[in-house]
Image (cartoon, rainbow, N blue to C red; front, side, top):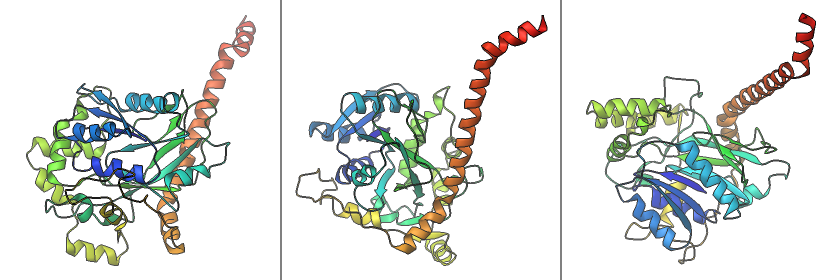
Length: 343
């Protein structure tokens, strides 16, 4: 797994421990100038031999460049069969078996599969551990083209290890010659915990990755930056948090669901002092039971928008390929013929 983090101390220990117990063999992490204890947490896993730590002190956001570097290192120096690309607030949950088991079933002709984002919404901030509070999942995410909401459907990428791979910004796609995508199948859920507390939002805002001239900020980053500058982060958090009245109403209309899977998994890995067990420290590997038919139906409905998006992306790729072929023809024999005809 690759991991890019900046000031994620409230979640990164749980994130790394979870994935090492879920089937990930090794982590390559890039720490971008963290000051909140994130670096020290990652160093613990580095000392244990389970993580390779890269330090980036630059105060900017070169995500695609840094993640591509980690992806290539995974293949060339760590012999990775498969690489998943996770943010610190993401937990890859396989739909039966471990992450490794799921990826082992992919036919050899395919080199890219994707996981489906499933958003967990903030709850009133009581200062406690995020996974104990955040057990409410959005069941009806918006289409990515919807600019009115920050919680939209999307997919994250996993791919076979390749020394020449390139990762798109946001970890939504991977490219390399002959690296074919298995489309329309999302065998891993990516449990997403983006807004966890007011303090976490303040750290995110202070990091201010908007400084990079090449970074195109997402809607939630722009809104968060505005709230930070206007000193209304608590109000911003509260506007997205689900209180008990909202929860009851939205459970009834099926727009929200209670989902305790991550909370329960982390309870089994967490020590009394709040730290998380490394593999081999007396904790068994996590198990992931096969979903029920009802769960499968709900997931298929939620992921259907991703199939639509994938079709659009595939069509765009084919158009771009056709444009490149036409351009080559115009510069080649077809161009020569046209010039001769004009004479």
